[in-house]
Structures are given as structure tokens and as C-alpha cells.
Amino acid sequence: VQLQASGGGLVQAGGCLSLPCAASGRPSSRYAIGWFRQAPGEEREFVTAISWSGGSTYYADSVKGRFAISRDPARNLVYLRMNSLQPEDTAVYYCAARSSLVATKEAGQYDYWGQGTQVTVSS
Image 1 (cartoon, rainbow, N blue to C red):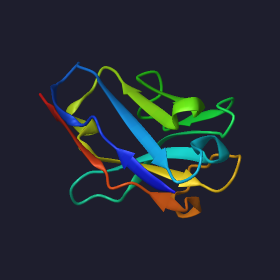
Image 2 (cartoon, rainbow, N blue to C red; image 1 turned 90 degrees about the vertical axis):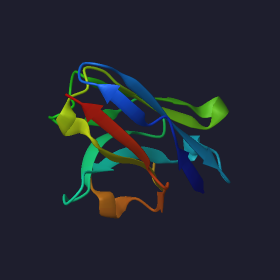
Image 3 (tube, rainbow, N blue to C red; image 1 turned 180 degrees about the vertical axis):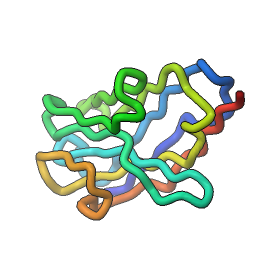
Image 4 (tube, rainbow, N blue to C red; image 1 turned 90 degrees about the horizontal axis):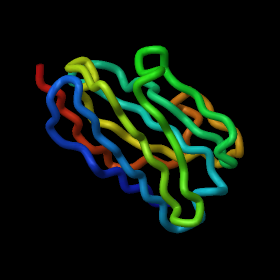
């Protein structure tokens, strides 16, 4: 599975961005998908994840109520919608696929990773 995250950019605080993650090689619907982010000098951290069916979603407390994950299995796409962005959301955002029906918050449980897309939020 190859993953391609895109849609990053520079946005002012309070703004929004939508990051698509495109999966190729095998249908994304056979995998749980997670989003992680890594800020400079920080550890990679969990953001959100969605099960293969789309019926279960998980969010980090820091983004709950502001971010939303969804998937379009027919197009092999998973979307991360980010609203009310804050400077502390600045990071490289990665999507990852797990060879399981069930999503998890643990980065080590994901088998495939995209290259990341930079999100910068100015104050």
C-alpha cells in the first residue's frame, strides 16, 4: 500500500484545512487509517484514526471537537478536516494504514506510512 497525504499549507489561527490521504496498491477499505503529526523537536503523536468500516473513529483530546476524519472507500481516500486551527497544530501530518479492521492510537501498530504534509498555523 502506498499512501499520499496532501493539502497542507499555511493558514491563520482560526482557519481550516482539509487533508486528503490517497491510498493505492490495495483498497483503503481493507485497512484502518490513522493520522499522526510531528512538530519540530517533538515526538510523533496520534491525531485521529478510523476503522475499516468507518464506523469507529478516535481522536486525541487536543483535537476533539475541532478535527474530523472520514473515508471514501470507493475513491480510496481518507480525509482529515481541521477546523479552528491553532499555532500548536503546526506540524508535519502523516497518514498511516494498518492491516486490520480496527484502528488504534499506537503508531507502532501501523504498517504503511505516507510522506507527510506540512501544516503551519500562524498566530
